[in-house]
Length: 186
Image 1 (tube, rainbow, N blue to C red):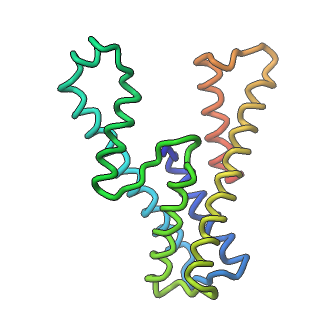
Image 2: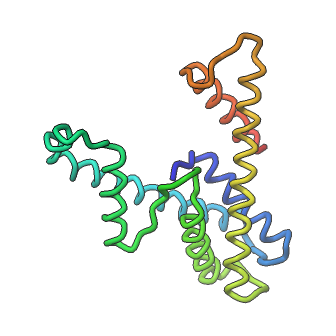
């Protein structure tokens, strides 16, 4: 799961805004609730990064064997990471997109628990519906992010000289335009 910090803040803000607009929750201090959600997601990213690093370190001992057997390093890191995560009961963010469905479901459950324990958050639905609403809001925000990415791609494609999509220049411009869209909250 690779979510840049500005996207995490935007995701937390959008999630709370949606839940309040749908009258699923009410917050006495919405900014504080946003920060709690952002911290939860950031902590999850930290754990994911730690697992990736542990997997890499575990494979260092087997580099010679991997080279002899022509094994793909990235695939092995993913497998070892999945094994480490399974032992800890952690759901990794490995999969298609920035936030695969199983990871979104895990975050929705954890954010729901956060809301249930937060005295500043009042909820007006049953716990299961709250969790489903949180998941729906996460998915809505990730769809908005996909649109942001497409806008950034279109902006790079609109440059008069034709820049190949697989080039470093395209990637750098895409990142710049994408960050601008995030920073503007679009």
